[in-house]
Length: 328
Image (cartoon, rainbow, N blue to C red):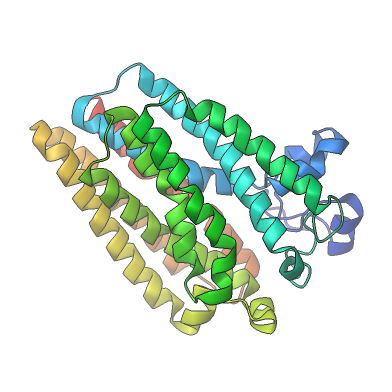
């Protein structure tokens, strides 16, 4: 068993026996501390694999901190940050539940996913649907605390959430659809702070979509052999041995677009130091992505999972730089 605290524990048969999901974190709270009756539902929500919540939340924090870099933090921003955190956890859970409902037949044919609650028989489709709507309902209670433009934006993101699970059936670029859904928080949090949607937020959203193409291509390399057998498409299968070259393109594009977002947001502030620090965000973000490319091993699923999980730290970097800039 790997000593890496981020790696799955036990054999596949042990996972199936205990209800654990194959790619869950070792020692996660769901498998060891949550009441037994809640575990299948929390596994549906990927609560035992928190990286997805981070990847949904971080663009929210980008949007909030870059918006604040224009005009400073206000007290309500604390609730925006907290509300986005709650919303990211719940809506990531609802989205994953929907994904597992639509993919239940595929998941049963893929080694990494056959231990998930639906294909392994821990919950029924009806139970999963009820759980999905419960999570969405609680999220709605958070959402209505924001302004009308923010509410409308957040609701429009559900279109991409609904489409994403089907994308791998009709396009080689399902990662782009994931990016459209996962980075909507940049638009939502910006609008929650500023009251209106503006160009820097749109640029930040585009940068996030390109970043998603980067990290989810790495993630998809875990399943490429099973995906090929069952006819599921992905950028990992599309790029193949040219993956590293494509990742470099995504890195350069994402950093460039994020830098444009920063410049368009902060330059009018007239504070050179604030601009320089904010620009440091995309630069450091790109350097962190470069370290991932250098260590990429597309035929090693465990290495791909480790690199994918590192993107939590990658995404935190711009938010920290933007936050410092906002305080100047």
